[in-house]
Every structure is written in C-alpha cells, then in structure tokens.
Image (cartoon, rainbow, N blue to C red; front, side, top):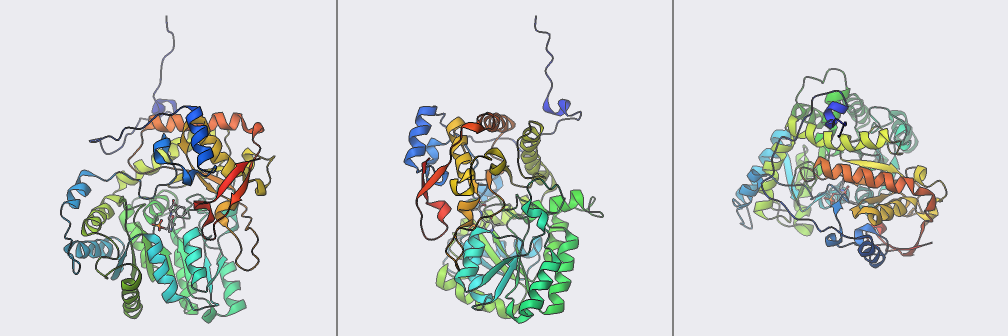
Length: 470
Ligand code: P70
C-alpha cells in the first residue's frame, strides 16, 4: 500500500496555491530529442546556443524577447491593422497607449529596441562624450560607442556580486556619477543611461528613491536622464514589493511615476509589452523629438510606422495595457521565482535575489576549475542543452566583448548563464523539468573542461561566435 501523501507546491511552502490569470486556447507542439540528436546539433552550431535551430530545442529559455504568447485580444487586434504607408490608425492608438501608461508626450515607433537605441545615440551623443549607465547592455553600449560615446558603468558595487541580496541592485551609485561629472565636466556627459530593470545584473530593479535622487543630480548639472524602459513594468513590481510607501499602489501608477523622473525612454516592446516585434522612443522635449522623427525615416521607416506593420502597432497598444495589470505581473514574476526558489533550496549558485525575467546561474561558482578564457558560462549553456534540450544564453565574457580602446577582452565580474522565461508560454511542469536538468548539470560539474573560441565576428560576437570543446 502506498503510504505517501502528495502535497502541492503551495502546501509544501505552507500557503494556498495560486495559478496564472489566463487559460490556454491554442498549443504549439514541441519536439522531444535524444542526447545523441543534441550532440550532433550542438556541434553543428559551434557550441553556441544562438546558432541552434529552434526545432532542435525542447524548452527555449534563450530569451524573453519576442517569445511571449499574445492574448486573444492582441490576435484580434492583428486583424485591425491599418496598413497605410502614412498616418495609420494603429500608430495613433500606440501613441495614445504610450502617453497614457508611460506618460511621454512625443512618440517615435521603431522596429525594436536597438532601432530606438540607434536613433537616440546618434541624436544625443557628441563624439568623445561620456555616457554613464547602470551597467552596460550589449546593444545599448554598442550604439553609444558607434555614436562616438564612451560608456562608463556607474551602477552600485553590489550589482557585480551575485551573492549580495540587496533589494535594489540596479541603483546608480550617485557618488560614482558625481565623481565623473567633477572629473570631466557636465558638458562632456551626453546623458545618463538608466535601465530598469538591469538585464546584465540579473534583472535587478532600481528604487524610486534612486531615480528621484538621480533626477535631482541631473537637473542640478543640466544633464538629461533617459530610461531604457524595456522591463520597467517588472521594475515597478519590485518597488511595490520592497519600497516603503508603494505596497498599495498599482503597478501602472508606479511605472508612470518612475517615468515622470526621466526626460524620455527607449523601449524594446518585445519584453514587457507582450509582442513578437516592436519598439519605440519617446521624449518630452519638442526639439529633440523633431530630430528623432527626422532620423527615423532614414533608418526605420516613416515616423508613423518605424519599420512596423499597422497590425504590429495595434498588438503593441493592447499589449502595453495588459502588461500593466497587477495580476499579470505577479504571475509572471511568480513563475520566475518558483524556479529560483527550487534551485536556491538545492544550493545551486545563482544571482540573488532572483530578478524579474530570468534565473542567472553563476557559472564561475559552477566551474571553479575553468578560467574566464575557457568560457565557463558558454560551457554551462552547452551542458544544459546536452542534458535536456533546454536552451539558455551566455552572459559573461563572450557577451562582454572587447574593449574598443585596447582590443582585449572585457572580463566582467559576472560570468552568468541566463535561463530566461518567456511570458505566458510555459507551465509549472516545464519549470520542474528545467530545475531538475540544472541540478543534473550541477551534479556533473567536476567533469567540465571548457571551450575555446574558433570564430569571432566583429560586432556583438556572442550571437555568431563558434567554439570547440577543450
Ligand atoms: C534579451 C534581448 C534586448 C534589450 C534589452 C534591454 C534592457 C535593449 C534591448 C534591445 C535580446 C538580446 C539583445 C542582445 C543580446 C542578447 C539578446 N534584449 N535594452 O534577450 O532590444 O532586442 O528589441 O533590439 O534587454 O535580453 P531589441
């Protein structure tokens, strides 16, 4: 006789269970693979998960970018696309949604986030100017550098320590920023580049107190403050959860208040806003807007479509509103946290506290036998794929690229492998499979030997680099 009594995950944690605020209407079958299939696929992909075909992947945690499931309302919106070259009705719907939920007056649509980064960098940076930011992001920094800017990391020190459990590891260290201003003069600073949440630090939030103080410092020195709003909704959740005075405020209100401290924002709508493609740039200053609106026609498309179809803008307008709902955000971050708590209980080394969009495994702690030149995080991504067909992403020395001044590798303190959770796509059972695979790879960590790079492209090398096992 079976004496065991099974418990739900909620019961095991001493609480009532909760579930997602949606149900599934359409499914996309996944292909299960065998280890021998995966060995062939990984070798063919040069040991780089970006080069795998998605048909060879079982659970795809490469990114939460453009991989979320749209709602029935968004799909219905796709049928309302006004595919006019100029003045599409959907653009005005999008413009209104951005004005209402983010609070910026002037809006320029772009095909995705880096399109917006390109435009703001070309417009707001003069060659040789400094661009301080709360940790680099790959595409953001590259566009700043291509415009002649010099990126300077001014994030709080805690952000570089995976084990530090501070609640707002995305905060700017104001003393670092002030030193930069004193050293180079305010006129040599193009703007402050603030991301909320901070992707490369592990999806870590910025506090409202920090953005307020930053606003004051910038205003005193006549420096503009621009926001990477890609995962601002998730940032607002953490403010609601952790910052005194915000517990009873809706996420939408917190997000809007946060934007209120900034001069403008760029957005990859492929994340928070629940669409497969799209982005925007929005500012308060009319003169800057005129310049941006002029430049968008050179690189993206007319200022009322920016590289998007009318239907894409409609889906984005609807997605923005859905993304701001408290129940949605709680369930989205709740799922990431569910996976994080399992791994934490099992002693798996990762960035703490668990952030908004992903689990970031600490590859240095997995593989103390490997130096950074043997690409520990790339190795870990490869091992996870071999074990179970899960696809993750390297966020370490490969992603950090080379220093444009010296040509040498950047050696970031964080050497991480990211398990990124798409929104509204996978179930709790998928998370269990992922957790068990991470555990299996961790248990086998002593056998890892590392990789060497056999091909290195010039820009954003992590996307297309190839490796060989050592
Ligand atoms: C990811 C994606 C994109 C992104 C972002 C932040 C905070 C801007 C962008 C650019 C996709 C990606 C991009 C480069 C390397 C790996 C993956 N992040 N700001 O997976 O937006 O992709 O729309 O041009 O996270 O984190 P877009």
